[in-house]
Length: 522
Image (cartoon, rainbow, N blue to C red; front, side, top):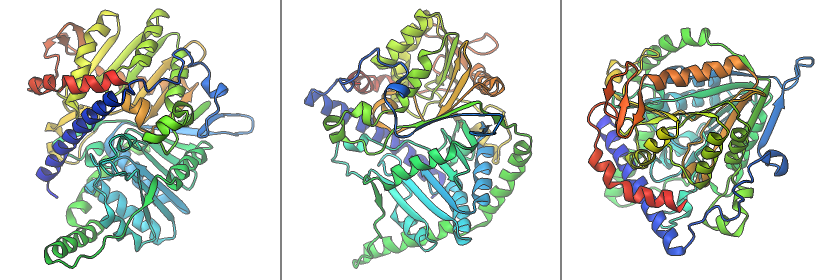
């Protein structure tokens, strides 16, 4: 598939997303079910991990005397470095590899990862893949899964509900996870697609992952098992060979396409050489941080339209946001939030006001209209960001341009449009600073529908400082909101509040109503 085809696919994804949001909003209006937090107390978010035990929640406190609960963390800011780290992990695998992603694209990055998984499987490593089957982003279909079966690599799909299941199709698995040998893991904002590894010549994400090695990893793998083995995750169905000529030709093309995807080619080999040349020196000097207190939390699998009503949904399925609210409520100095989407609901507004009442410094970093991959989200951001500024909240928006943090594989990448995609939070408090890197966006999908996961580290100020510096470095190279419809760059020059280039402001304004409807309902 060439880039123009992939670019068209991305535009189609945005249209699908908007359609789903609008339809979902209409369905909720008609059903009168606009209060999805009906079973929760607004002021209940205090020490929830103690009062309401989670099935997929672990806290490891390091004991320096026995070396028990040791967890070491590395921060992966560069996409190229993050891809090479995944390659290295797979090559180190001896027993098992678990792979779980919301997006897994059959592009260059997907090709490299899959080829490494095949090599691992050939040497006897047990390899399992779990991929979300959202119609908006799904590409790694049954033809690819069938091609991997010959190597004993099993692919399962999360929530394959048909499109006419209007509500259930919105309960997506948004987790991102790679686990090797119950010993090392990566989680964070990156999916498997060129955009996340600085490989696209048209649009890329500034993102962040955490690599962890230590005692917390088995808990992360256990959570994978829960998702992989749940009834909502289906084994792929072998494509049936058709008898009609036209359909047979299409079938044979897809078989050949999957086989070609597994085969090496000159372009892929050349890209591998460039990737390693850039990433290897950076990996060799990358610092490891010992984490005094490591927390892993994830939502539970199986959420659907029916569980939302017949079960105590918030208590049985939604865990990560409660952990995050717990962490935030204990902040007494500064809260830094980096999220590609900033869509407040009643709970997050309540929390934000609580922070302001406590005189906590609030710093936000998100996408401008120029840098976002979802202009309907920007439509809501610009309705609220000026009010935040008036309240004393510092808000940075990414301008949409490349930041020269590391070199790139393809020179054209520097000219591409760039968005921020890192889901990172920094909690600065008198009883110990802490960071969170995970899959959680500050929006209603992450709050209520998508299953999310997060890795927290408390007590290592060097790690906190490293992540804070990365966030602020990126943010300050963007634009700062200073007043209504006003922004400045890092030199103090007045700039377009919507970001660099010529963003489509008219399109954003047309999307305000459907995006507002969805936001209002939640």
